[in-house]
Amino acid sequence: MIVLTGLALLSACSKKDNTAPSSQIRIDSITASVNPVVAYDTSVITVYATGVNLQYGWVVNHGKIKGSGTTVKYSACQSCRGLNTITCRVFNETGEVSDTIMVRVTPWHSK
Amino acid sequence: MLQTAKYLLILLCLCTGNKAFSQCCTSGNPFISDAEQPALQSRILTASLNYRYSHSGKYYSEDSRFTELPFQEIAYSNYTELQVGYGITNWLTALTDIGYFVNKTLQTPGVDSYKGYGIGDLGLYAKFNAYSNSRLRLTISPTVGVKFPVGVFDQELENVQLPISVQPSAGSYRYLANLFISKGFGKVALAGFASYEYSQLIESENFYYKYGDQWVAALYFNYRPWKRFTIDLQVRNEYRTKSTRENDDIIESSGYDVVFFTPQVTYAFKHDWYLSAYGDIPLHKYCNGIQLSFGYAVSVRVTKKIDFIALMARKKSAGPNGSETK
Image 1: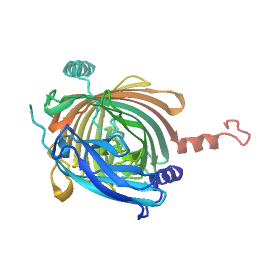
Image 2: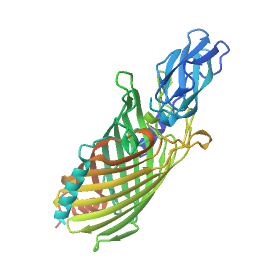
Image 3: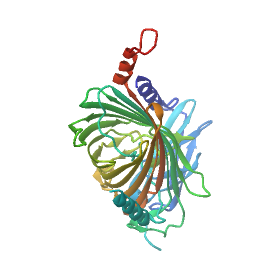
Image 4: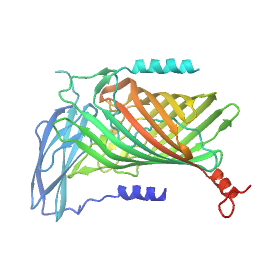
């Protein structure tokens, strides 16, 4: 029991590398090809950033993100209706910066 | 009674027909649906290892199949769970379980899939032997418990966060209470089970979400045709209220009302080893709005039971050199 709990707690602890803010990275803009987007449809999200050896991380509070790097696809189902936040994290060895874009998901309806 | 059992089985099989679907993805451990057991006697330990495969691939709108979407989506998972129960006294049993997802996958054919994996939630429960009458073969066992979100949540793959539906852990505490009543008649036992689960708000780094409350009611029919072989037939209703998101907005396409039929067979081997196999088959599904609906699930369970009092009595009766005393 103790071993199991220890294992469980251990696996719950995960940390991202170097999350300190960096002055050497700048996010110029984040764009969405479609906004608002209908449920079950997709919107292409692109980040424009300047810096050296940049890597990109993506998070959304409702819906799904497919792909990686500077351009990803966002899609959402009917249960994700509303104003959703997509956060892009741009990072390198100096640290990271992040910015968000709000995408509204509207209900799906028969065509 | 045997005739009644046969008719019930035939009726349920006819009802299920070719409707074999699977359970939809939600975060956290799935509801393990094998036949519920009463509280254990003092100093009895049971340990079970459960494997479960679930699969779903059909969208539903209310109680009808929804086929208008221009794509297909499949959700499936391979899940294992370790459960341990110990009878502390004749009236109190402590139970714990921990789950591990080998995979929890959401797939659109032709497109890369989302795959979550890792430890799910840790459950701790206290089960009480509120009433037990061996002459009447009647037991009443209420349970209270908590599921701790100790496992993996906010899981990312290549720096892209996975959707909430494939996160292994529920991401929040869940509190539950249930009641199990069983009555035996000869080779047959009938049982009832009612459960309520409250999910706390998920307020993680990336998610703000609250699952609706869940109610489960089940009726069990248990029959032992041979000494070592048991058949359980279960009809279970799972009902979940709608979820909420930021600003307490109700998510209309969430929550469901599903009736399952769960047949189960158990074989008791020597030395208190048990092997069970069971499956979940939805008989009726109602999904609010449009949702990927429940499908089928199949499970296998191995259980070992240890009676420490009997073990000690056996040791005592054995002589100092290990030979049986007379």
